[in-house]
Image (spheres, rainbow, N blue to C red):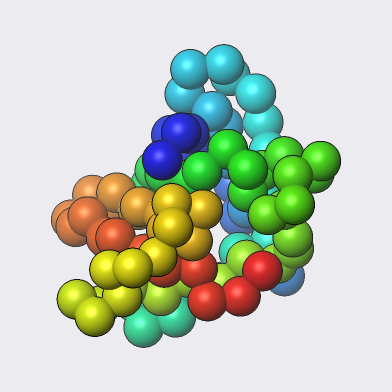
Length: 97
């Protein structure tokens, strides 16, 4: 995953304001999470750069994620994400968007 994005703010309708830790660029994405606790401010989302680039064929809105199961190991990188919370690390798969 190319980007490490810190959750700066969560607005209504699941709009997440994300800050790239390296470039300090800000992104606004609509995100949904299933089968896990909802991320909070200061959690870190690891994403493929194609998912935040409107010119990419992989770009879409909203994105929905759920925890990756062992039988989902044939996914490509743009279908996977990571989430680092205070208490736990998740490997996620994109199920929509």
